[in-house]
Length: 144
Image 1 (cartoon, rainbow, N blue to C red):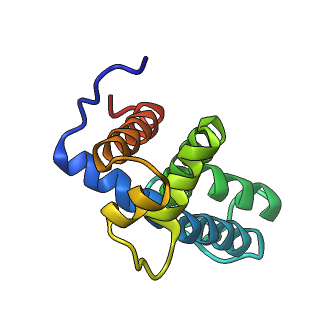
Image 2 (image 1 turned 30 degrees about the horizontal axis):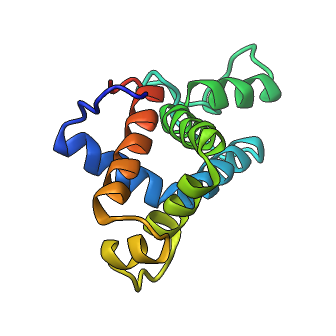
């Protein structure tokens, strides 16, 4: 049995938004990687140093690799996308269906009550399963 979720309301909302926009985050991550590999100029982890500017002994492929590894936005998106993917793969088919209905169905035409009825669950069971899934993602990201 999973331990009781100790996520604060703010963290719960944050995780819900990250799951809701998972597909957009995945596309953004691919775009950022592609842009760097195609030679776009990005700031490194040191906000005062620009990758691709100035002269140094570092070759262009190494510069791009360093930019990929040091880019904070890429690191954050990678950790979020990886955590959500890992948790989604661990879920049962019923829980995966819940995630698809609650977070990934656009436009959302059903209320939580309607989703619960469609899945043949009580509303409280639906919320409990959703909270368990949020706790798993929160644990993967280090929020628990």
